[in-house]
Every structure is written in structure tokens, then in C-alpha cells.
Length: 77
View: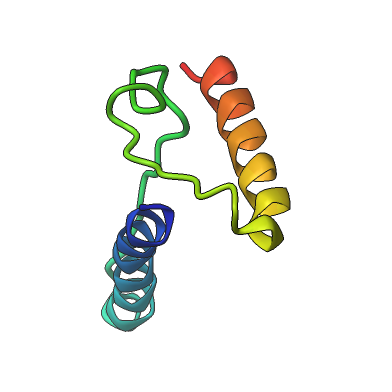
């Protein structure tokens, strides 16, 4: 889930950055607005995440992800 979500967001950012350099040559300015975290139920029923706790080598990153996500949602608009 996280990889797909972030890669699609970066695709929009990467395209916008490429357009910025290309259009700058003919006097057109390119801007992109990327909103921050919004308090929604994305982390609840909408967040389809399965953690196989038997994969112990992944547990530190899973814990960090969940803590970061909780903090971001608590501070969201």
C-alpha cells in the first residue's frame, strides 16, 4: 500500500518538475501544491494493512511506520 501510494504521488511531482524546466524556457512558470496530512479515517477502516508478525526482520520498520502515521494523523488539518 505505502509504496504504491507514495510512488503515484511522486509521479505527479516528477512530471511537474520536468514541466517546470521545460516550460521555463518559454516564460511559463509551473507550480505544484502538495497538501499535508488531513485527519480522515484513512488510518482506520480505509488503511488496508496486514502485518505478518512472524516476519520478525520487518517488525522494526512496521512499528516505525505505524508510529509515524499516528503522529502525522494527529497533527493533520
